Image (tube, rainbow, N blue to C red; front, side, top):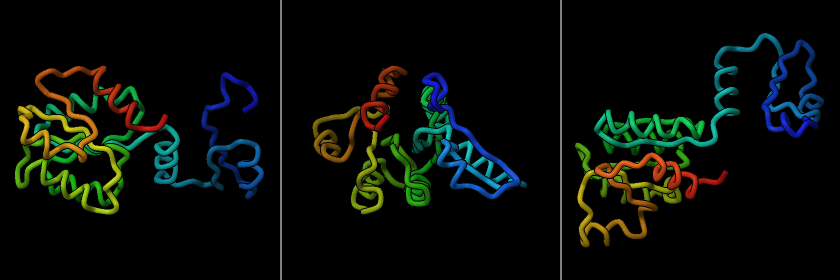
Length: 172
């Protein structure tokens, strides 16, 4: 932990001795007494290696795949939803740090999903990036203003624009 090159490397202490306070004081990122459960280890490793949780709400599986691949370099966890209803449920169950939202969804429109997210006290502050193939006319632009953080077009996919938008909206 004193070495600049390894200072930010997570350290897990798994011991037969119960001395969590000492391990944490010495710089351990997590501590457990043996034996550890698989669930604890997976959850702890996930928490230590992922920066953010991002929810992708899009009925197009290929679009979700492309976004998930682009986001992989950010070491974030990605949740996916194929409908607006599923997206709202996932946003409620595990509050994401950011949401990518398509406007063309089955069951309910992306605009309705966005309105529900922003009217819910729990999800109101989560930044939303609209990621759609829909043409954004003046009427729709006025409707989205104040609710969506960024609007990106699927027609002009730019991986760097996706990464830049995420980095601008989420703390490092």
